[in-house]
Image (cartoon, rainbow, N blue to C red; front, side):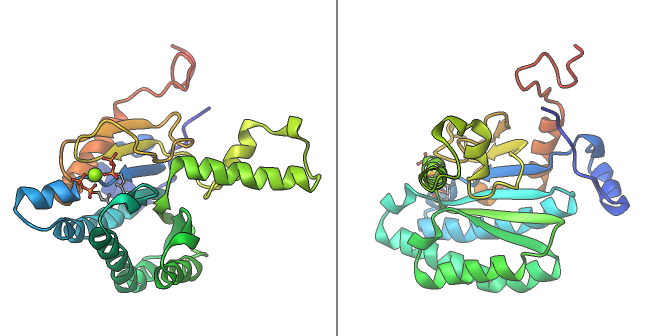
Length: 261
Ligand code: IPE
Ligand code: IPE
Ligand code: MG
């Protein structure tokens, strides 16, 4: 396994250098568990939904920054398959916020040629939100430079189950034999099989767990956890996490990145 940094044009290369990053060691795909909205709000005596609103503002900035830095893909955890356990008020507020946000942002996303994708069990979402997401995905489907991948009603276990179901359909129809099932096939039937695994996984708000995010894809991701709550996470924190990533040695089970040391 090798690490291929994204190919940057000269403007992006210059920008990456200007913030103190090495263009040769940039990650292609960064995934973020945007946690701590509730704590951020509660610490200020505000309603949890205020934290989610503020988290949306953070997300806007980080998506644009990721694009400017020349990443190929940013995946963010927006709503997990377990987040339905929250109060109807909070779940309803989150669904409304996602709808309003998607409607508000779609023109700028198109103008910046950002491809929008959704990973998760979309069919279980309210119809208006599902339709908004599907429309955003289809209107941006031809953009190739940068992908903003939203994990909504996403669960890592559900994703593997969905992959296994798709494979079993092929077994049942005689296209493959059970003996032919191999690791690559599980990956090929995940929600976004063409997106390479995340190089870096960031979690804000300090919890040291995956909370069912990208269980399959993060097998060899570098993990960066910051105590900063998501609404306070800014460009400098983001660049700081990329600097930390650039200091890591990725080994993939071998002795070093290039196998020489
Ligand atoms: C993350 O923030 C956003 C979602 C899960 C939708 P939280 O709402 O989990 O914030 P904390 O963890 O309660 O602080
Ligand atoms: C993970 O955060 C889900 C999202 C960020 C959308 P949670 O707040 O739901 O995770 P736990 O409950 O702390 O593990
Ligand atoms: Mg949380």
